[in-house]
Length: 294
Image (cartoon, rainbow, N blue to C red; front, side):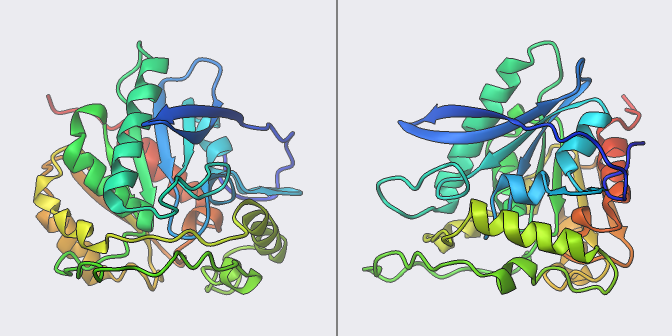
């Protein structure tokens, strides 16, 4: 098992940038792959930061890239920049909605699958708000997936969302800050100072302006019982956005009988970037490659 974090120095491999036309808009997807991949996975970032800082963090003298760790395990790895994030521009509406994000992700999964016709359909992993996008995608496009990983799931499954007011103000386009970039690292010693500093620098460079969302009531379509693809629920033990009671509700209500729940001890919302990184990658790999009962 190649480590997802640590002190091993390795040559930095820049990801391939792929642009997909989705309903006339260019969606950027970052790609790294093993030479002869056994499996495919698509990674979906959270509310604030895009695919590369979240999943391809480069730290001098350390291995913190989830993409690189999964490549070492024989995966073809794709990290999406949703509309308004990273290298994907906003569209003409200047907003992102849950339904639009799900439609985009479905198109990405279809395109990725066609790039690997000899392999099983992609696995899907969503972090934080990306876990909500991934759940709704699994509900609507389950035929495009082999498994879904709901990581750092930030919602009470009983929550309902109100519709937007009749007329919205223009998008805020608020500047991001170093403080916000570092706020997920709350457990002392879980990640090095160099790791935090690298994340802050790379996050601010990739996403200097916070993306604006609307249509929050579209999240009301989230129904765990409608998720029938094999599902892994995973979170850090000390993740304030993913309290255990909410994860239990999610897990117990899933419609997939093939499911697992993993807690990463001593880590928080950004567990995959921290000392829990190897355990995070191990859990993903073991779930994707678990023995099938039939």
